[in-house]
Image 1 (cartoon, rainbow over the protein chains, first blue to last red):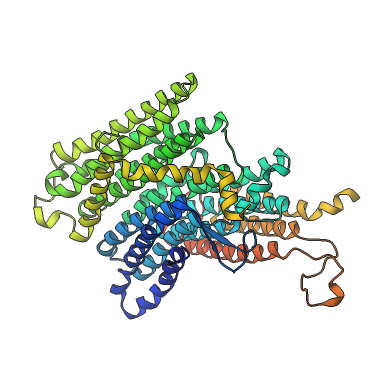
Image 2 (image 1 turned 120 degrees about the vertical axis):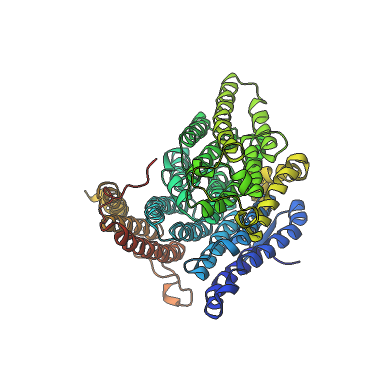
Length: 495
Length: 119
């Protein structure tokens, strides 16, 4: 059986071969990310049944944990790396035709490195190793945001870079505190010894780590970079940043809080931060005229909902949060990809310039509609099942305060519905703006290399929405992987 | 003041972090902001090294017979710092190249004048 280490090693190796390949032929490099992600997806599917029985501990230097750096391929790690590989594969197929200008070989190198960073984060069992993969993800996304080199891209790249660099320094400070307290960096070993020090010391190190990872996760006071970065990047990169990169940050926060520090109840503050993030995101999205900024703000809103679900700190709440992670990754990738060629054809990101697109680009518009409906949470799509799980988990305890908060969450969903329905109505029922290109059905629609991933994403969203059982049976073990600290320590350290 | 002597490296490292944070928050020139990030990095690295430092300790090389009885400095934080330095350098290099492109577009590095994107 092949080792889970290949999930990281194969794309990393290919990422560094890509620039060499680019010297021979720039056209060939376009297929490398798709090949690497197809490999990762197959390997993930092969590994999944085995790791569901028992997590696979990979020893990188031939020493038993807690010594040396090791990887833990548990249900959560392999499940999330499958999601990363799936979204990464579809977006890289899209990018084959979409990314034509600029240094193409470098784009594909950085794109693969971004995905390697995310995969490494979800598999790593070592705190500093987690930080290194996090930095790989961050640095490649700083560069990719400014890929086009235009005014907006460079400006948002600079903002993102300054905020991200300070976040990374905070993480490193937190790691320094943790190492000073426990003398180890293995997450399981820290988790085992976390009760041996005073709560105040634990709190200080946790605050540094959460704040640092929270910058990438775009939780409310730390998300000023997100709308600029996600809207100025090329659409294929926006899809990956919204679908994968912020989830990786959230994963790190959840892993630190639940597994390392073993929090079984969350302070009210976490729920409130989630609700505030949701409301601010949705309200800001409502007032946008720029379609990509609107989608970026909607990502903030969804992150708020995921934080709210994690803040419930119950098994069903975490399951709901993971379900939302999957549904948002698929739906937001679909929205950014289908909007990409609409913007390319019209040359404008204004919502009003997309009016009447339902006639001119029928397939893209239909898929956009599916993604938007799924994100709002309409029944036949995956978003409905995810939101339903979260709300059922929140109402499980029948606490009056939680019921009130659920009402606010649903209010946020109404706002979300209002702006998405406005766009969908414009796409299908409004006349195209004055001076738009005449109807050319076969010329105007996006090319096949873009339509294939878009339609596949839409098909997955509908299929999982109709049969949520195919996904939910993996969510339970994945949630327990995150929550069950004792089992995690037992698997890694064997005690 | 002698009681501070044992903590002087921590005071120094957090001083550097705070100075860097002040520069990032207050200065409007992007180059100065990048220097501030660099100062934060330096402070954090100093902190990491001092976490594993033992006064009068030796390097942990076990083949030297005369060093066997003495206390040894923890090598792990030093390995961490080596990695962190490399990461810091690449972030600063990327930041400087972004600053060059920003200057080409706007003709200024004053962050108060570069504000086309807002909430």
